[in-house]
Length: 210
Image (cartoon, rainbow, N blue to C red; front, side, top):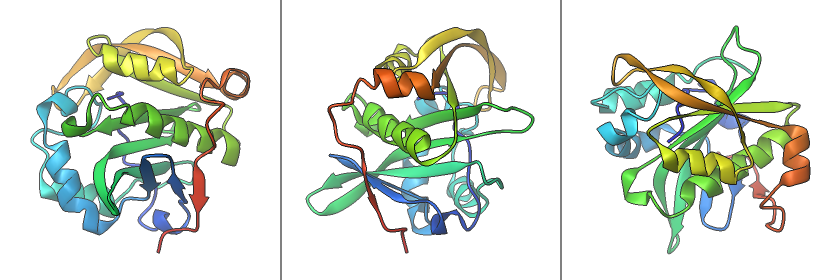
């Protein structure tokens, strides 16, 4: 998990967030009916300790508040991740990007439920959202961060062409403390020229969810 788990979007975000589809995933705006699944997966200290804003324990009320009060802002987008499985869709995590005033750089982050670790889902989801951000918006640069004790997230960022940009501290809500992080960045030019997944098709974009 990367450290930016931002509650992004607006209460009406679903009307303007597209549905993306990759080989194994469907990405769409979170809905109120997702609350039980979100709470079940997010209530995990191993996830919370690697993200910035997830509380632990993570209750149904936290998931409902997250879905109902997605932070205001036109520059913010959150996707819920669903794994395709024999005609069904199983909730697997979140991926989001956005800007927190007074910051000017957009941050991207994700978290994946523990049952889905080690399956390449984070990389597949991040690539889809990065492709969307750079191909469908005017964002020129994305930033990300990973705890120094989280090499798995560092590998995800590197596989998505992020470049290490330095170290810093990040406040982790679940720990009530600041922890050392590695910081990364990816700009539009690098994405266009080094898109390591360039042989793969862009994620299919469907009509807005209803």
